[in-house]
Image 1 (spheres, rainbow, N blue to C red):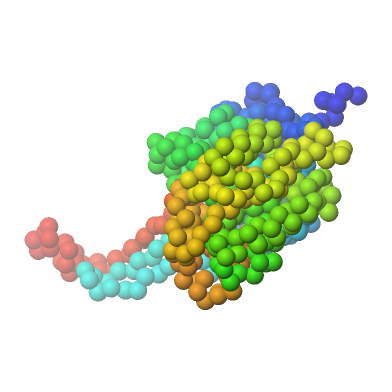
Image 2 (image 1 turned 135 degrees about the horizontal axis):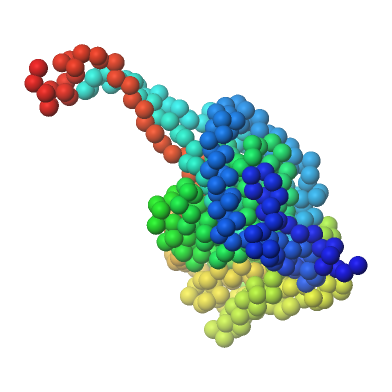
Length: 506
């Protein structure tokens, strides 16, 4: 049998049904660990987007969804969270095969965090102020006013390829929790787990509430952003694409949430626990092969411990198991694609040309049985300056740049000297003093003596050109609601209404 005939094909999901792309075309999906073709996904276009948006718009009018109570939505979110856990292995394998993320990480972190987020929001909406009654005021007269938070409408969701399931949940969970309808644009690089999760979630939703259109940014993302009947766009991805989305969305004044690039800076104080920093800093950059926007890619180290820390990190980095992402022993899988691998290599070449020193790594790693995979050695670069290309631009790979400092104010200045403001951190034994330093760091999340320390009841998002808006926690609901004030007057005699005297003579 021809291999092309047995390849799974992933279509669109529109109005609760699996729908083939109107173009009849599909995009190849490759496994980054092997380079093998593993699936084909729909190559959507504006026609498919319009069909999905129409379904979502109609679902907003469906009384089964429009009138659903907060209690019922809470139960629904619990159902979804439990469904994620019940189908964890299938979802994880699909994700690992397409993204290259390790099975250890997806099963040990992502799946649990996804379920926990749905559970967190299931509880949060019970006390969320969807309706707030204001205290009475006597001027100009007594009225009753309530402030209502209503669904923003049809939400266009554009996810990234690095954490397909996790990033999807960060967006659809609050959108559904607030009563919106959704059109998801999945990454054409990693669409498989997204398709399956949306297929599973649709078991519990009225038709059209949650739709999926697969395809490229040009053919699907752009029409979704520009569609006049889409009320909101939530995007995770590169800063440049975020800028383009903001410009395009301005034409229809869409609400926009952007979670963009980062260049996470961690300050290592001279009193820091060297062993903890070495393990933690490598965790901060090597998890998912550095393909995380909040990765700790800049390590700003005090001169007193600089050499000792680098030596310790070098030893640990060279022990990280790089290889088959489906092997539970693997700590770091492949880079997602040949294009991304080449981009990282360009930065490594630039680092050396600008005078930085590669302490360890920096080369392609050949794994037996996975010779065509895009594996890169864990890489540590020293002798870095903050204005070097590799030190100030987002590499999105397993590469940490180490910068030396002597005074704390200098370190804070280096950390903040970036267009990005997504993550930052401090390594020190003085956790009280670290709180004060944290307040001076320009980042949406600041972690003390750890990294990737995200929890589903705390907001996550960026400052500066790392974007705006927050995901996770009850704060994420604010981005998926519109405020409306409704006031009721009680005085029926027009002559007793003081404001009417401004116009009328009684």
